[in-house]
Every structure is written in C-alpha cells, then in structure tokens.
Length: 224
Image 1: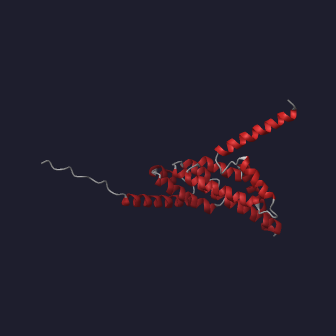
Image 2: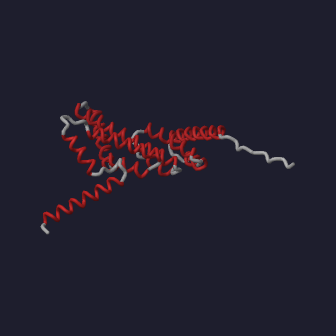
Image 3: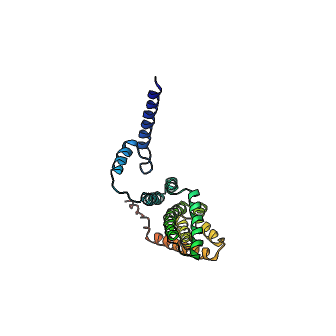
C-alpha cells in the first residue's frame, strides 16, 4: 500500500471519529464536520464579516451563564475557558492597569480605544464568573463561591456578588455556616453586604414557609 493511500486512510478515519464524537458530544461545544464544512462554505461567500472575536466572546459567556443557571458547573467553566483562559485574563488585566496608568498622564485615542475594548471584555468575563459563583452557592459550596468572588476585578460588583452568595447559601439551608462565614469576613463593607444577603435569604425562606400548605389529615371513619 502506498504512502498516499495510508495518509488518505488516516484522514478518513480521523474525520469519521470526529463525526461520531461530534454527534454524541455536547452540540454547544462540539460540531461534526458534516455541519462545520457547509457553515464554512457559507462564511467564505460573505462579502463583509462581523467582529467575530467580540461576538464569539459574548456567545461563550452566555453559554457559560446558561450552564451555571442549570447547575452544570463543569460545562460552565469549560465555556468560559474557551472565551478566555486564566493566563489570558491575567495578561489582559495587566495591560488594563498599564493603560490606566498611561491615560492618567495624557490622552491617547489609541490607548483609550484599547482600554475600552479590554474593559468590555472584563465585563463579559465577570458576568460569567458571577453566574458560576451563584451556582456554587446554590449547591452549598461557599468556599468555591468565594474563590470565584475573589477573581472579580471591580470592588462594587464584588460586594454585590458577596450579598448574592450569602443569600443563596442561606436559601440552600446552610444558615449557621453562612452566619459564621459572614462574621469572619475581614472587611467591614463585605460583612455588611453579607449580612444584607443573609437577611434577604431569611426573608425568602420565611415567605416559602408561610405559603407551604399544611398537610391534610383525613378523619378515620367512625365504627358502626
């Protein structure tokens, strides 16, 4: 058998495996070649192209949020990692800080545009992180939720997420642990927002208990 035939056989086997795996795997993350090739053909016939990077990031963020809302944390993290890895996030935030320092001493249109572009990415990524933190709190994983909270780069959003995490953790039935955690927070502002979340969670639990119907008791028939 010639080398060319061997190579062709390898390509056919690889495409066949890709097709099978793509059809069986999650359709949001994997696409079989039978769907990818026609889509690529339609893409090549376009006369102009949208900003694919920005649209792809938005799509992946929405996928991550949707998975987190469903409680599928592994898939949510995978989608967010496709949008931006931790190494890319660290490099982007470093560039953001450098641009911020430069803009304080002078206005450069190019630097301003780049700063706004990176800041939009920051907002999109943080929405995905926030959804994952809330999902972890619903599952009762307070430590995991707070590890994600610590990744946020905006103090105000971080405080509001602490409030949401404490509220959802309370609603998951971890009242005592949530109270202990809130008391041990190092910053007064964090304790305040955590306590607000705890109060909100308690209020929700109380409302649920009020509307819960009482069990019906059937009277036993009287003996003749």
